[in-house]
Image 1 (cartoon, helix red, strand yellow):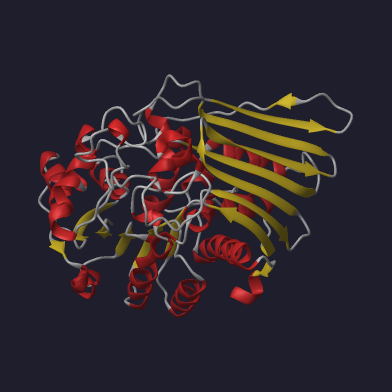
Image 2 (tube, rainbow, N blue to C red):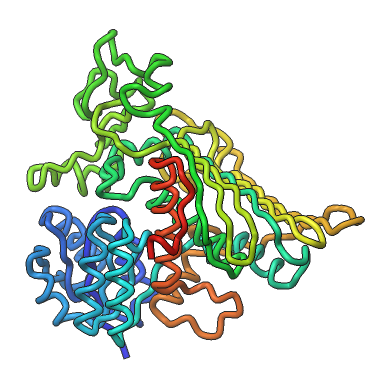
Length: 432
């Protein structure tokens, strides 16, 4: 039996699910509605659907969301993060299943509302943590579950975003904390969820220090010369039409990518949303440099850092255990070409690699092979979409994430942000 899906939020991320339902997963369901405040963006996706030989999908403004819920068995929510809680709760209360992009929401109040709605509803809620499905991360989970390094006592986790991907958060709606919760919520929930899942434990106490050190009008990047635009002029508010476009690597040429142009530049006249703001302009209130210390219920400690302006992109995570040590090193691209693709996986010649090693006490280190599949995130996206559209089945790794997983990861980021602002450790029980 095929299911009826409504897509809520028709920006860039929606395409993953739309393409899935037009392609490999078309036997599982159909798209019955689009819901977005911008008609141009909905028309762009309808044009792609027409090109695939399918009938046009009815479009709805968010003020008609209740009507959308009467048409669908499930909603796929890819809106601005701050709007997730409203859409999720309304769907659950209507008995409609929810597939929602991470983060589940942006604050403790949203978490409480979603938890209450999920408890009183028979509908299902899935949070799409696609990084759980990446073969390298699944391999880590398997090795830890097998007890290769004994009981884990501490974790060290460093994540680096480069000066294309990391910079992009400071161009768009994410740059405003009220929209995204900041990178400790929008981005780091991915990473906090991985650790929660790897350990099979829950965070209890969080301490953090953060800052806006590189981006923004007073950042180190601006002070190092990037604060001056073409011909010595002040930096522009946005890239489109700016004198330095094409020579300044921090200015995004939105016309160079037909999809970005169609979804955002061509849609500006409807809602005024500007996708290519300058990363050194005013109006940024999120951080780009974050250090976090977390204690878990099982007494494991996590030291975590996120840097959004690295020359290379990837992450390193190490687990110390009672029997040894496990290390995963991932380089998604070893260097960043000026004006390169925002998505690291879109470039094949930038020296990416991944290495997983286990070293038990009194033994030589053993490199563990990682078997990747086809598609994004080493084939992980296909596994995620299988879980979303066909059901999780009997997964020994328990990769499908529910609302409790989403809440734990969000509250970790919220606690870290509060700790950074107050200078004090924060207990998750205070937020819950």
